[in-house]
Length: 326
Image (cartoon, rainbow, N blue to C red; front, side, top):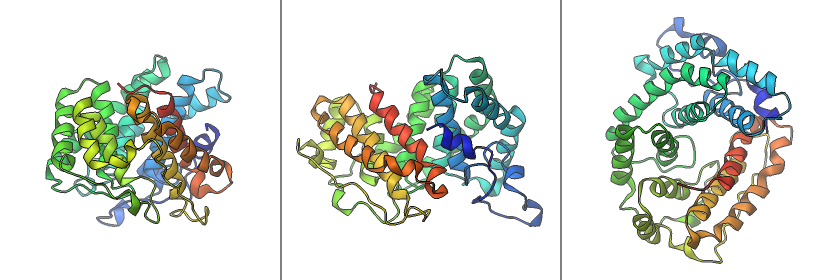
């Protein structure tokens, strides 16, 4: 798990920039534009690659290459590099850069660093905080403007972007941010019913629109409210014999088709979350296991199209498998 993000954390190319150019002066190399998050093909994959390494260092003290990992984290997440990232995202024409997907992973990384007792992590948490604070402002400004949620299985999915933000708001005891997230989640999703599970997946999904919506509502609603809502939204999940065919991709060298391995991992983390929090969903753990197992081999198949990001998704599934929901 650690070898994959470690390998690409400082690998600048190949690289996919999501840049909006105002003029030729903004043309620069990925490392110049994003000195913290230039590796692992694209900005958001770099961010969650950093999260993966912080998580693994914290939970596996005897991890091989531990010191190398820490050194690379310290180089990338320096105060100066994060200041450059803040400057980039502060441009008026880049207000939508990595919205909401990359934003959510920054807050996940912030939470992981802030929750560590290790001195190196505390220093990096302090370095990253200005970027996280900026993104919290962006969430609070943008969500009320989003009249309709984006229900897709890729980066623009609104529910996913709100879920990791909610986790950080709870962790940081930020009641104002929690209120923003809850108010807008209820506005956008509370009246939804009968999610069409049979329509999934679409061809390049790495998120499940139905399960991502379950994820955010599981967070913002109390138990009785959530169970009442979920009966109307996803009644099929209550079936003790519920099964869902795993996603299969035809070509793991295709950067879009390999998304489907990520879908198996992201579905798994939702099944684990439901099973751990609610006894009536205990049967979904087995469904999660089937999905997790389906795509594990793809982590190390030698194709950079999946290697640069899939380890983070698998690790997130393992993390959720072990975590008791609060």
